[in-house]
Length: 273
Ligand SMILES: *[C@@H]1O[C@H](CO)[C@@H](O)[C@H](O)[C@H]1NC(C)=O
Ligand SMILES: *[C@@H]1O[C@H](CO)[C@@H](O)[C@H](O)[C@H]1NC(C)=O
Ligand SMILES: *[C@@H]1O[C@H](CO)[C@@H](O)[C@H](O)[C@H]1NC(C)=O
Ligand SMILES: *[C@@H]1O[C@H](CO)[C@@H](O)[C@H](O)[C@H]1NC(C)=O
Ligand SMILES: *[C@@H]1O[C@H](CO)[C@@H](O)[C@H](O)[C@H]1NC(C)=O
Ligand SMILES: *[C@@H]1O[C@H](CO)[C@@H](O)[C@H](O)[C@H]1NC(C)=O
Ligand SMILES: *[C@@H]1O[C@H](CO)[C@@H](O)[C@H](O)[C@H]1NC(C)=O
Ligand SMILES: *[C@@H]1O[C@H](CO)[C@@H](O)[C@H](O)[C@H]1NC(C)=O
Image (cartoon, rainbow, N blue to C red; front, side, top):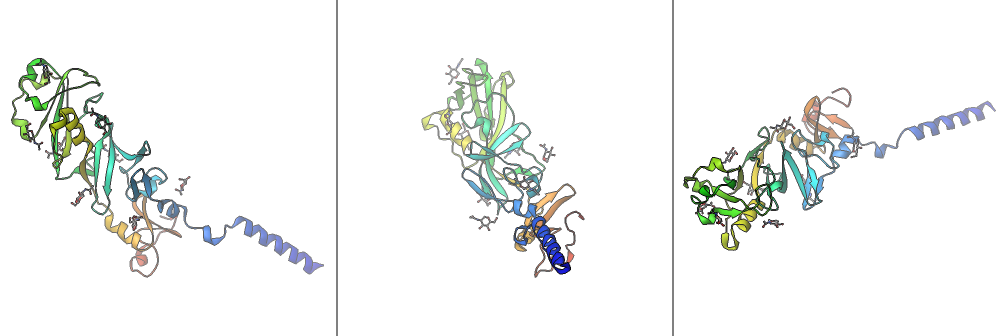
């Protein structure tokens, strides 16, 4: 009777623990699991640290590398008010090709904003050259601009007004009173983007803007991240640490435990770091 009751209570205790303890094969550290999911949007796939967004929480990336998916087509990165479509990412080279969303469907935007990047993390690649677009210019400006650099905006805030573009090499063109134009923006294009005007200036300009331009990004923590990935971890960050390595069983400073030297030095566990 006594033994029976003991057995019963053990059984109850056992089933209680079985119910509250998840089986060990699904106890992988949640941040490890989350950060093993690559970022995907349209044609851009397999994007990892330092990028985050979509199903990758902020802890899977670095500040300044947030991506949003635009129309399920391209990822978008924002710098101040400007949104850029990401046409290509080369994570091995820490660079990517981006294009201004506001100029994507034509060269006449609603508002005139110069191109800016978050220069703390991004910079123009050496393959970039700037062009300047002038909008809403008075007739006297027209005369000083070669015909192949003139176009008319059909929409935007200066529809039917004279507009122009000039590249750096034609900066020598003496523009009469450019300050009389209502707007002016600087946009990088790829040095290799040939402005082929056989189908018209507007088309040529649109094409070269849509090819985008390359920016390099800061490879900070790359070495740490490579070590983390080699040890089977996923790179990330948290409020107190710019870099953390998420392992199956918790987080470490640099790499996951195993047959490598770094694990001797990596000490902190979730909650203690
Ligand atoms: C993991 O991702 C899910 C869904 O994206 C989210 O709800 C959850 O809070 C994340 N967990 C951690 C620890 O980041
Ligand atoms: C995704 O990227 C990782 C490195 O970041 C690489 O090891 C893996 O082979 C890639 N997968 C595909 C399907 O391209
Ligand atoms: C650059 O990104 C950081 C992190 O998101 C942000 O704090 C900073 O304000 C950004 N700077 C600019 C100029 O956008
Ligand atoms: C990145 O850099 C490499 C090497 O300099 C270059 O070939 C490539 O065109 C650049 N851009 C992208 C998006 O890959
Ligand atoms: C510019 O290119 C985009 C994308 O190819 C296209 O949708 C748009 O109609 C073009 N606009 C002009 C004014 O050529
Ligand atoms: C293009 O303009 C940006 C600022 O708008 C500047 O930082 C960059 O150096 C310029 N690039 C070239 C090649 O002149
Ligand atoms: C300015 O140039 C445009 C495009 O070449 C042309 O259509 C327009 O007639 C010109 N306007 C004046 C006032 O010269
Ligand atoms: C810059 O503009 C000039 C004059 O319009 C043109 O001859 C030259 O080919 C252009 N350069 C580039 C790189 O587009």
